[in-house]
Amino acid sequence: MRKNKVKLFPITSLMVCILIFLIKSTIVKASSVNNYHQDQVELQAKSAIAIDLNSGQVLYAKNANKKLPVASMSKLITIYLTLDAINNKKLSWNQKVKPTKQIVKISNDPEYSGVPLQMNHAYTIRQLYEATLIQSANGPAMLLGQAISGSQQAFVKKMRKQLASWNIGGATQLLTANGLPNYTLGEERFKNKSKDAENTLSASDMAIIISHLLKKYPQVLNTTKVAKSSFVDGKIITPMQNWNWMLKGLSQYDHNYPVDGLKTGTTDAAGACFASTMKKNGRRLVTVVMGAQHASGDDPSRFIQTKKLLKYIFDNYSSKKIKQGYSFASVRRVKVIDGKEKSAPVYVKESAVVWLPKKQQLSNLKVKFSKNAIHAPQINGKTVERFYLINMPVLNSNKDIAIQATVHQDIKQANFWVRIWNRIFHQQQKLSEKANSSVTTAQKAKKFRPYQDPKDLVKAGTWNKKSENKEQPDLTKVKDLWIRVSLKGNRTYIMSGKKPIYTMLSTGGGYHKNKSDTPTGTYHIQHERGEDFYNQKLKEGAKYYVSWKDHGVYLFHSVPTKSDGTINKEETRKLGKSPGSHGCIRLSIPDSKWVAKTVPAGTKIVIKDN
Image 1 (tube, rainbow, N blue to C red):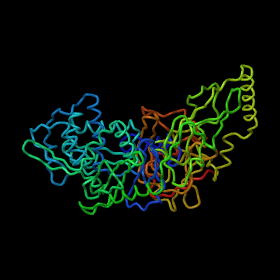
Image 2 (cartoon, one colour):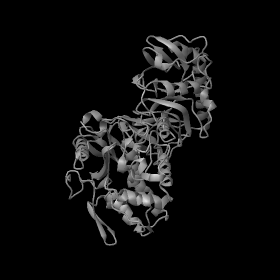
Image 3 (spheres, one colour):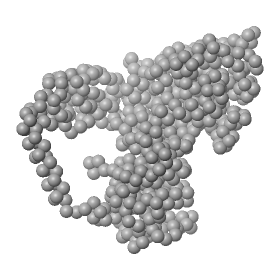
Image 4 (cartoon, rainbow, N blue to C red):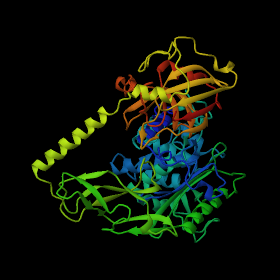
């Protein structure tokens, strides 16, 4: 299952598995595509992404699913929850709140950006909101969380829950409302995490957060575009200057890139981060740059890299409108089941805007229809499935850009006897095809295995025992260690040079048009690993995982688990017998535990169909 998980680190993974789970495309687009046109820009940053806010179309991605420290960009989650609380009348703009000793301590620490708060002073929610967005003030962000949830830990848990509802998980980690390290919470710090641990998210995670924020609360831009302001606390007036230097009136302003938001972030671990947004040709773009150089407080690297990314988009893309009623050349008609006519023309139901390479025309777009056929009857003007624009990935989706399809005339059903005959004919066809298949699934799988099964191998479907009835080898002592996976053979082999020394039942990705959801090729074990994860949306998780691709997206893990942690017995039947995961490689519980806990990072993985 690719994962997207639960546990804080788990969350990510499960998410991915899950997400991947959910997904099937280049990351295969778990939370979205990981790399897309990354070679087109020499971007000096660890990760980045650029999207169209309205459609979610991904225009560029570099390591977009890699989990990294995000520093003060975390505050956008705090701002979303603040606006949510106001919208739900749990807070009001003029409501006053008082800081705790720890909040006062952080707000007055000269090492952190912020405005100083005083003990026993009361501040309005509006003051705190503006200070958080304009000055990136850490104490006010903490006080907003305190006002919403009563404590820092309770608020962080609310942040985590909000991200889970948006399918953001995996190696994701949230510990503070403002992006500072765990220890800044004082007595409220999370004891199960190191004191220096920080919030970690991916560029695509940040793009998802920003999408939700701007779509639900676009008024946030009225504040994020403010270059300078003041924080008034009685007779104390603290000047505030926005850390987004691309705003008009600040040092990195460029009229070619009229940015009106959104948020910076800086720590030693995160480097320089920046999420920007602006309008181009009536479309709102969002970019996220993470891990840019931060040589000093005056270093403008993150803004330079953002401009470079925006320039690439403007130089190479143009937005084009696909009008209502448009007919794609590659999908003019689709098959009709039980209809008087065997096929029908299909059209774009509602106008849509897409970004295309400047030389590309709508007429040569590669498009596929979401189904092989539509069923009669259909009514003129109603939605009949979707068109997918190939190789146009969408944020947080396993599909490319989708556009609703419709018909321009009523499609009537054939008469009763014709429909009955068609169904009988198709059923007989299926039975005939099944009867002609003389080779069983097990026989087919055996044909694809590169090595003969050992005599002590347990039977397929055994999920609660080791695959071989012998002691598992000590992987730290195996010479020329590598791992070989046979997807169609449903086996995973621990190799010592050219010899398999331990064979495991496994289940890889399901096949679609003879292509597995599990990518084939040579990979290496990565550092992300853990004991369990769970994806809330997919209602599925797993135990004992270790990543081998895209840092928490593709994993070795156990057979799937349910929300209560129990094994999904229906899925265990596939183990060692047939493909069926969403991209990850499933193993038995003992095998997955052994691999996750002992296989060294860097171990080579070779995955083939046979």
